[in-house]
Length: 189
Image 1: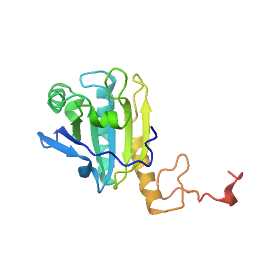
Image 2: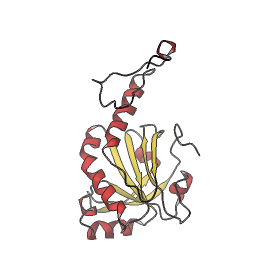
Image 3: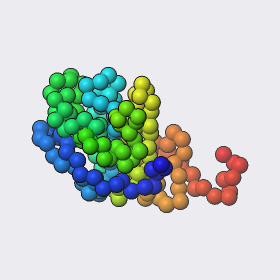
């Protein structure tokens, strides 16, 4: 299923908010109004996952400064998320909300459920209207680098506010050149 350009499906899931040390409910409506980075991962109390979530925490302040919010999602419960947060040195650093998709509704709806019943290692950047702008899916043993999402959010915001322009490879900020696709560029890049 192609997800780019699709609207995030409706959902209502329990989550653990480490910053407030409380359980919360997160819905698709809560994500509207700002950019969102959803980081799906296979399971709590595993090996690659804590390295990725800790790495995302290291990019969290910069993403927040861009007006983006981060949520992690696995098929564990919000109770397991809290227990992991309380017992892992890496996960105890996390301040963003950890969504529990124990019924696998969101993971299944986005076609991110693997054969074993766990979430694929996937990252989505979603715009303020809940439209999916980017998706990255890695094999289970291949960890992701969180700071690439900073440029993805910057590029998504730029393209949204500059219709007709495109951000080429290695684009990082408004100071960098963009492209205006058209007949005059065919064969010249």
